[in-house]
Length: 590
Ligand code: ADP
Image (spheres, rainbow, N blue to C red):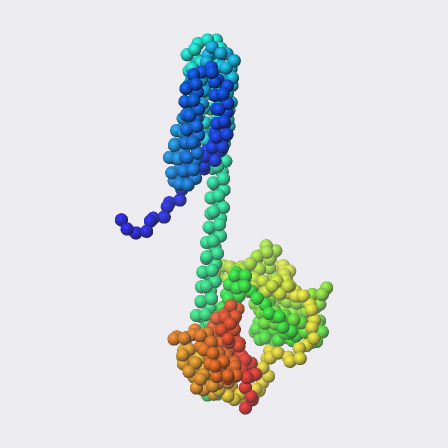
């Protein structure tokens, strides 16, 4: 028969118990059995001259042979024993023990001259002593106790009965009582040993099951993270095409007029993008990979900006929207501005969503060295029992199918995780019908304004750029969108649809900047970048800025791009303004 050996089936609990008992037998018996052998020599010396010397020597030889057999079998067991064969190894050892017991019993029978009472007494005591040693060492394995003690004591018992003197009969009675005692004790000890072993194996099993469950959960979680990353990539790509084409259309004076529907589609696309971003954030939190960056930002300006952004949503519901920023102006602090904005916008979005009448107020204060941003509303409020779970992922107070308010239930859990990762916290006080106050706290460490204020909002009207960009992307819709945006910025565009073309175009066109998609046929963007860098080194050319343009928005993706020699990373979908911010530093204004 050919083929791979079948995997061994897992051993049953009973088989494992059998194996453990046999192991204990081997482990505990050898040393005492060998160390008592010199005692046999002492006995021989003691009875020398009282019993024919050939009998004594024959017995000593037999004792030595049994001891050697013990050593040989023990060695063989340690080398070759297989847990599945425990029964056979155990049975073989019982035969040896019976032989040993029988050999010792000769000491109390054939080597005992019954006419010498003193020798009878000493031999009897010796047999009792050997029985005690065996009884203690073999107690964990009842059949072993039986094999040794019965072959030791039963012949002695019969021997004494056959002599029928009062002393012999007394010795026979004592031997019978002693045998019963040893067997009873052996039985009980073996039972409790088996119970302890059973308990240990059960605990091992439970521990193994828990470890397996953990491994399974980790595998599942890795698969889920991979799934989310892939899905988000796949969804971002067409979304980028959709939103980009839409914005190009809207910027086109011929079609822009009278098409408010374009705004509607754009808002729906933005909403979808928000959902994808939430799912991505959630998977980062799950994988313990939520990272925040730190750069100076003006928190007062950020709050003004957030209120401005939410004002149309509040106006649609006829809600008042107030900003009460009790902060120094400007209020620069180090932190992750986009993430702070994300939390504030989420709290404001919820406040507007769950309020039908009244007002939403954003206030900011410095309290005990901490920046405290309160988002207060006069909406439906939250009951005490719901308050305990609104920060859990996918939790919504009203989770029925007919619920009134849309949402995924991810926003608050992401916001609190973000707040905590930034060294702060997010808490809520609320009561049904009385509105809610969400308090977002951050450590307050004011810092001076940076010398160059970062490009948060691009000043309009912007002047056109001039120069050549190499755009490497295999997706025709993405090419259409990006090319349209680049041309609208005033740039000349060379298009390559795979990595090989990208390298060739770079060598031919020598663009000012390369926009590189990461996943392309023939050769991916990472390899193409490496080849461009090699060509630069070989020819002594200056380093061309390579900006990765990819739908992979995870931090790892960014790192992978930088490791491949790219300079920056722009996640799809992006707007024309995002492109301008990235490109402007590399072009002289036209
Ligand atoms: P989503 O708003 O997408 O459902 P969130 O995590 O932002 O998810 O909010 C979870 C739930 O907490 C909401 O569904 C809502 O039941 C409750 N909630 C959040 N903010 C408010 C608020 N300002 N007033 C009343 N309930 C709120």
